[in-house]
Length: 386
Image (tube, rainbow, N blue to C red; front, side, top):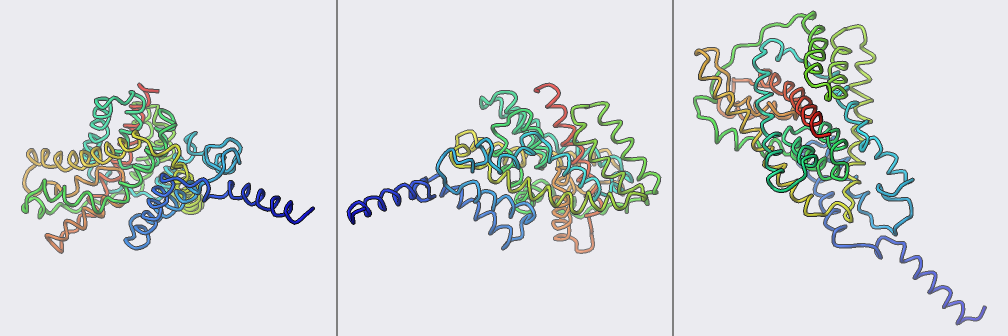
């Protein structure tokens, strides 16, 4: 081979190699999504906003937006790729019930059992879901897509993934990212709404300490909870069944190893998988659409409406309660499903006005009720839209 032919051969192969690099396939969309992924990671590390969620999701966004030459079985949407197999648990709704199993195993329903009327606050906060559903229909989304994105109002990432996997698989990425983003931003979004809707007198309301709950009550609750909710909404069985099963593992006292596995290694493993694959699903070539923008806007609105609904419902029922039995409206925000972050927000805002008024234990009642409520709402939407 002559010198000229050698250099021609080398240049051709270098050109061919360059075509397969990320630089050759980079688009503005990739740059935008990589920037968003970096923002998620920075918020998680610097501000400590839901780091267990935002770091896997943020890094997943980076993974999903490394540009590559098509048909190399690399991308999450390319059949046969490793990422597509990991993503199978998302698109088939396998991961969310496992998350709910872990949530059940780490949740104490004592606050709700001791004061059952707090369940109503969790139900009231679901107005954000059905408000978003109506808004999505008004904006021209098909009924199935409207139902899938409406669940963002419940601030429940696993439920959002579960429902969208059934109703709108093509929108899972946008819906999941939106739901988890707003979950992480609970400490920023909710306090201004809570302050706006309440008076200083209402913020200073002291609630009676919750009564002691017996071990028998704690064991009976998940059984009755399963039977009651799933007989009404059988479509919510995958989520509600695993939630109450996990709680029974915890409260029975005889399956500690199983409960520890569910709330530890299992939920941690699934959180990693669900975070990374959902993040990777935001591949710029399929994610950056007008629908995605619409989903984020409607998600924000539904989140605000859910917080509004919870706080205003407490103010409403206080009209019928005697002095000494009234509920502090600051726990109304915790009716959404972001456990335990929204309950911590109730505590944080309450302490701003009275350093000795601890609302966390009371807020956990509607907070865990919100987990149940969002799963029930998903079952209702699934039952008439699937």
